[in-house]
Image 1 (cartoon, rainbow, N blue to C red):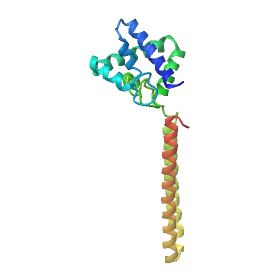
Image 2 (image 1 turned 90 degrees about the horizontal axis):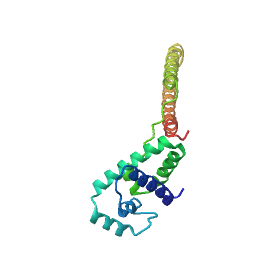
Image 3 (image 1 turned 135 degrees about the vertical axis):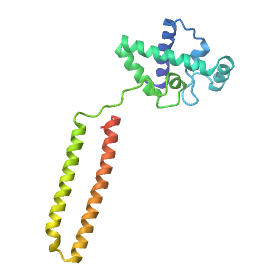
Image 4 (image 1 turned 30 degrees about the horizontal axis):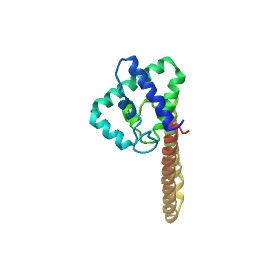
Length: 189
């Protein structure tokens, strides 16, 4: 779906909603829904904006169209799942650019639910924490048993080497956690 097709679809649905609610929409108001400073605009955007600002209050217009778009989306979501899917597809296409229609409908319109955590995610995290804590206690226990047998110079080196290894594991785990968590909850996993 191209930008102009997406706009045609959303404008058509909004105009249909205005008709159902007996809300008058002038030709200029309909044309203004196509406004963009970049990309495809059926007419000169500067001339369109100038004529619109001379005739209408932008705040009132945005509230009016926003309400109509919200009602239109609610209506088509109840009536036809295929049309609702096309609405989402159109808004997704337009979100790639800078289009006034998205501002009219709300920046993140239609709002999607944030992805929920997988089942037992907290339990898995608790299990890993217990495992790490157990490993640290086991290491401390073993270290107390073998440390006295090292000469002082070797013990100092061994302690530093172990400390550096633990720090490296911490930072690697932290980096891995951030990368996988970000992908998992943004829908990329």
